[in-house]
Image 1 (tube, helix red, strand yellow):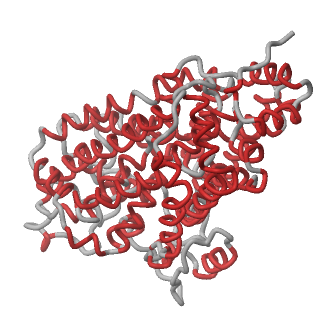
Image 2 (image 1 turned 180 degrees about the horizontal axis):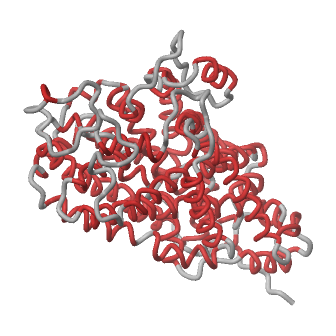
Image 3 (image 1 turned 120 degrees about the vertical axis):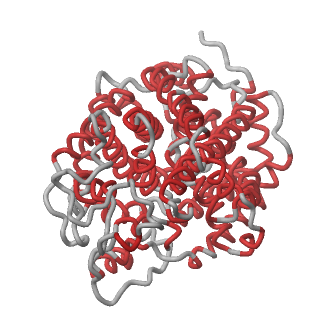
Length: 568
C-alpha cells in the first residue's frame, strides 16, 4: 500500500488533475515521475538554466546596448525592468514547473485551463527559435574550422574570393583615407560576405544550398541530438561542460583585452554615462526586450527545466541566484568586448563608434577583425569562436529539451515507451535541419533576419507575459500561488512578488506593448524584395511593428549596414 503524500505536496486542484490524467492515481503518478526523471543534483538544474539563459545576447547585445543607450545610465531602466518584470516572471515560471512537475503546455493546462493556450504559444516560439538560432552556430563552426590555418583567411586579401577593392588591416584609416580605392572593403567583410554567406542581392535570389554550411549545420544538430536524447540524464551531464567553459574563455579574453593598448578607452565608451538618453523611449524598449530575451521568459523552457526538480527544492533562492549570475555575466562580457574594440579603434585611428557593433556583426566582423590584429591571432580566434559555440549550444539543446518535455508530457503513455522519445527527437531534429537549410543559401541571411524579426518578436513575448501575469495574479490567485511556493520551500516569497504578478508586471508590459510602434523598422526590410517582405509583414500574425517598406528594390548594400543596430 502506497503511503498518502504529505499535505504540502500541492493544492487539491493539482492533485485531482494529476489523478484524472493518469491511470491509477498516486501510484501511476509515481511511475510516470520515475520514467520522467529528475535532476541528479541541484548543480545540474542550475547549470542547465544558466546554459539556457546565458547565451549569445549576453556577449554581443547587452554591451552594445549599454554603449548605445547612455553607458552606465542604461542600467537604470535595465534594473527597473529586471526587478518589476524579469525576476517575478522568472520565479513564476520556474516554480510553476517545479510545483506541477509538468512541461510548459501541461503545467498551464493543469493550473489554469482557461490560459492553456499560453503553453502552446510558447512552444511555437521555441520551435521557430530552434530552427534559426542554430544557424549562428553553423557560422561560428565554419569560422572555427578556418581559425586553425597558418594565416587567418580574413586577415589578408590574397584569397580566391577577394576582390580588387579589398584593403588589408595594416592601414591607418584616417591617415590613408585618400589612398583607399573607391568602395574599399576589408578582408573580414569579404570573407563573411563572399565566402561564408556568398550573399545574394535580395530575398528573391536564394540560390543553391552551401554544402559547407549545410555540413556545419548537420554537425551542430547531431551534437544537439546526443545532448538531449536521454532526457535530463544526458542534458544534466553535458551542461557541466557547456555552461562552464564559456566562463573560462570569457575570462581569458577579458585578461587579454585588458592588456591591449586602447582597452581603457573602449571601457570608458562602454560605461560613460549620458543622462539625456533616459528621455528616449527606445532606451526603455531596448532595456525591456533585453531582459526578456536574456532571461528566457515566456518560452516555456524555465517551466520545463523546473519540472525536473525535487518538490522541496528552494526555487526561490535559485531564481535570485540565476538572475544575479545572468546579469553579472552580461556586465562582465562588456569589459571583454569593449576592451578589444577600443584596441581595434586605436589601431585603425578611428572613433570607437565606427567599430562598435552588436549581433552577428560583432561576432563575425568586428571581433574577427580585432583578433587578426593581435599577436597569435589563431589562438584568440579559436578561444572566441569556441566561446560563441558553447554559449549558443547549450541554449539550443536546452530549448530542444524543453520542447521535448512539453510534447512528452502531453502524451506520456504514448511517447514514454521503448525508444519512442528518441525517435521523436530524431524526427524533430531532422525536420528543423531541413527547414534551416534555406538559411545556408546565398539568400539565407534575409530569411534568417525575417525569422529573427517575426518569430521571436518582442511584442509576442510582451503579450505572453501579460497573459501569464493575469493568469497567476487574478485567475489562479497570487496569494494561492505564493502559498504553493511556501509548500515547496517552507517560506513565502516577499509580498512584492504578489504585487508584481497582479499589478506592476502586467501594467509595465502593457505600457511597453503599446509603444512597440515607436521602434525604427529593421534595415533588412530595405534589402529584400519589397513584394516578398510586404507579403510577409501583412500576413504575419506576430507582426510587432508596421514596417516602412521601400517603393522599389534597392541594390545590395554593405553587409555592415544590415547588422549594425546603431545605423538603424
